[in-house]
Length: 438
Image (cartoon, rainbow, N blue to C red; front, side, top):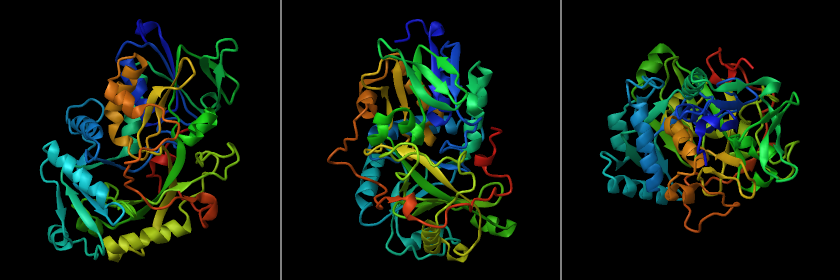
């Protein structure tokens, strides 16, 4: 579509992973009029990536995502990369499953073998404890798939780095009320999207409008409520002593797809836990019938529900029981938009000229931060490969019959749980979700 890219203005609503990567990649293609709107300055505290860390891996049943994961991994591993050098920590990844997730693990194993990935294998508990003696838990009932070529990245730092690189290339960021998009604007005659109106009543107009608002998508596009379902993965952080951190420093990422994720300690001796038992937010004040973001901007002190916290302690007992009663120095709700098929939506929005979506990270989008904007730019220019168009097209909530959900625990709504209001603490200033100046 962009036959003269330097003359096309682009408005990106949302400064998370997809919006930031899009802004950066467009800025390297000669686009000179790019504006990003976000309620918060980078790293936006409403972005799922404004977090201590995220998993980076290429283990997928779908060969397209496996290929995309390897492409992103090559950037994360590049020690000379101008943005991401030194960020990737390769620790390996134990994927734990039970009856409902064994098919997903088996499919991932088979895909790894098909593409020639080495070292991916199933491990019994004795083999795990022989390799990592600090993992003293029983792993009772687990089936464990080991992948050595995986690791983690300090995600809040990475998002901030890419946003700063986009700014250095001339991308304009608007934050606070001036960046808080409240509604999209449409031409009264043609119905084409012409821009967005922010909380301070400013109308930002552009030739191309890209909605990259993740868990808040339904607030701007009400029709997206069935497609972009906001879900929360609760985050809990525990502090280790220097001696404890030394003990656990070489462990892999451990994920039980039906419980939670246990990360190795970071440079501040903190271990992050992330629940795999997602929550919705249908009982909200803004969009009836849709699950949307429970924003830290509106509820800065809300944290992990007590029921989920208890479940995560049971998970820690499976892995490293000596830490199961450790106090959490900070908890928060990490929201993303999920599609029923867990695919992204990178496509023109149906029946709306000049309106595009690049959103719905489905809890696995961060790892593609370095490269996903390239594909979004291709989509805007009409050159995205057909296989990606088919994967990422708008599907109106439809789920394929052969879909395998890697996180099958039944959804619960936030309103049915307890103990989450007014419990968040800053975590000694080390938490990326507290860094935004606005």
